[in-house]
Each structure stands twice: as structure tokens, then as C-alpha cells.
Image (tube, rainbow, N blue to C red):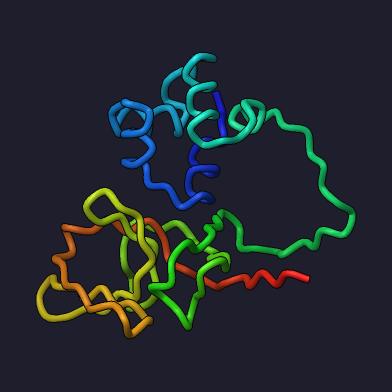
Length: 169
């Protein structure tokens, strides 16, 4: 059964680990639910909707579309995902409140900006290969220190392709 849990969770900037903890459920179970590998019970779906503060219909993928005719088609790359930036670690390149467009990919093919999972926390960082299997995890905001990790200690979720700036009028 298809559901929108993963998409909603990521759009809110919540890691799978954080949501699993809030639901008092294992990370593995939540991943199986998100990926449709196990049936989602109505009671569980309602609990998830409550925690994510969204309608049950949205979780179940049955929410009626109320798209404005003024909405612009962004022509995003096929299979890409979007994520709202909730911190300033990558400013000025990607600022808090902007939307990152991410192309899912499981490996780092080149240096660049990636969405990663490190120690159960999703974060966007500029990755730079060093010697051996070491990687520098850089924040473009100079107020944050560079971190270092072994390649096997981080999970590459996807490469950031572009950003979308939101302008309030």
C-alpha cells in the first residue's frame, strides 16, 4: 500500500530515527511502513498523522488536490525530491527556509553538496574527499566547524541539484 509518510517526514526535516522515537517504534519498522513493505494499519496511520500534524488523508495519499491555477510547474528532474531547509548550516549557499532539490543516489560520485544520514540524523553538507576513505563534512556557514568521517560512517541519501528560494509577498 502506497503512503506519503516518507515524503511528509522529509519535507518537515524530520529524520526516520526522530519519527520512530516519537512513535515509540523501531526505525526498521518505520522504514518498512514508509516503503510499503508492510501493511499500514489505520490506527498506526492516525498516530503518525497526529505526530506529523497533518490530515490522515494526506498520509494515506487520498487528500484532494486543491492546487491553485497559479501554481508554476518547476520541471524538476525525474525522481528528484524536495526538502525544506530548517537551519543555516549551508548559508549563504542554501539558506534556512529555502527548498533543496535532491536527486536520490546511494553513493558519492564526486565532491559536492549532499543529503546524508550520519548517526541517525539527516543533514545537508558539502562533502570533500580526503585521503583514504576520509571525507570532510563542510558547512558553507563559517560559523560551523568542519567535521570529518569515514565513508562507511555516513549514508548518502542524495545529491543536492539546486535550490528554490521562497519569497513572501
